[in-house]
Image (cartoon, rainbow, N blue to C red; front, side, top):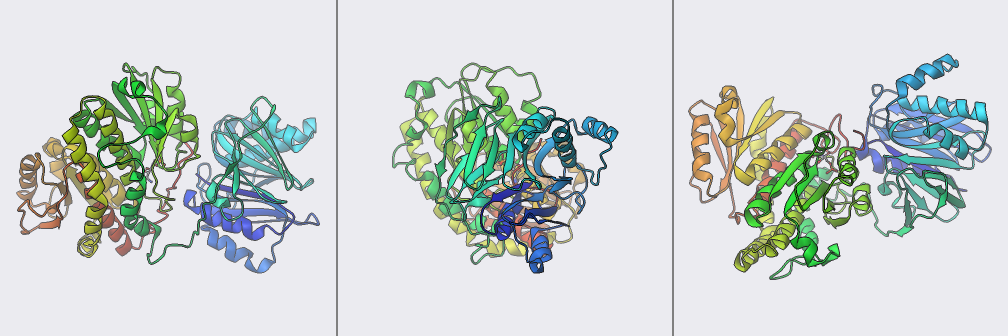
Length: 609
Ligand code: M6R
């Protein structure tokens, strides 16, 4: 959360910082700021409440120039979104930007007040700025030395970048929990919280490791590990180009990303899903390792958790492997019993989610036979710290709402289920039929996308709604959860999901003719049961929206709208039924004029606990 970009060069870097901020805005967008120093040592700082565009407008006529600088887009943790709380923060000549949380900020603030420091913001970041200043005053030393002294005293999870107005030649960055990446250029170097910020200006990157401190000048980069020894970190080439404005013919990134799903799935299958078998040799493990897996423990947050929940049905019913799924923030704080020969699977789109990363780290002290990350970002912390990884090949996802990364996570999970199932006695015919279903899925999704106008029409019914219920059974219960999460996240309508069989245990009390109930009703063995639940709602006057197969014989009746979808194979139906629910949320958010790609209070990459 929050985005950082810093640059040190011999040319004017003002626009590089602003453009980098635009690319990082999906990580946080409460306020933005920039501090820059020019060749003559002239310092400028601009901050504003709201979007990066406002900062760009504010600085437009200021003839902004500089060869070293820092910029930040904020997702508020300590202190409300406001101009005074926006970064960079200052303590005389010390300038700092920060991601993450300083847990002992209150204690430090008291100490600093007793030294006479005056605080102009409510942030924990300003505490670090003053602490730097105090350390430098007390002990002297280079910026690098002061960074080492200071981080020893702060607790929490953070990424910081500091610059010194009195020596504007170097940036010093420290990573304790929050990712930072250096972009290497010719006669210039950069630092950012996310490679995406640097894609147009560097094609070689160094990811800082946990505890690293880096000293960056325009012609030199020195990296020190947690005990202060100089270290070599891998420099990775990347030729990915990314244009933030490239929404193509779409109005929003989320819309584009929904429609990209057939291609994203094809890319994720490429080289892995062969005609008659699944090839996951990229894992680099032998068959015995895979055969030994007798239990799967999945940890994840949010949408990734929902995809884990779907896969639990698959692991148990198709591969005969017991599977548990847990929210990472719960997993990391309870006393666990690890099952024998259990593989830990970490699901994360971004690969930086703080709770998921912490749970992964914790698992290393426990008795898992290994950890496997399923992630959309190759060089992310979660991928780098897992024993094994499989990437989803969705391409960058910009909309805060996960869409294509959800469906491709499910594709990877299903391939893994087939692979493990094949080593665990899964019948060849079953394997082949699942493979066939996966291969045809992109085409089936295209058919649903072609019916978007039907869903757009239905979305109008939700304009004045404040609540909604989503229900499903079996592997479609997690799809109901995902549908509810999407609707609340981008339209701000309160939405809850229930296993349909749970209705009479409480939620039925909510049903009246104002309460929309969205039913996910594929043509499977649970449909008969689900129809009974639908009747319970209908007889109480609930407003039903039934997403179903064209062959299930539901008819439009009073208070009951049927959204008929094309035929879909049972095994891939959960992925398929997600698509109309994503579209529904999207269109509801459009008619409610929501900020779809950057919904309020949220951020794409949740790097704080
Ligand atoms: O990057 P991750 O998949 O680890 O993120 C976990 C959640 O924050 C994320 O899935 C969130 O729930 C989605 N943005 C919701 O659409």
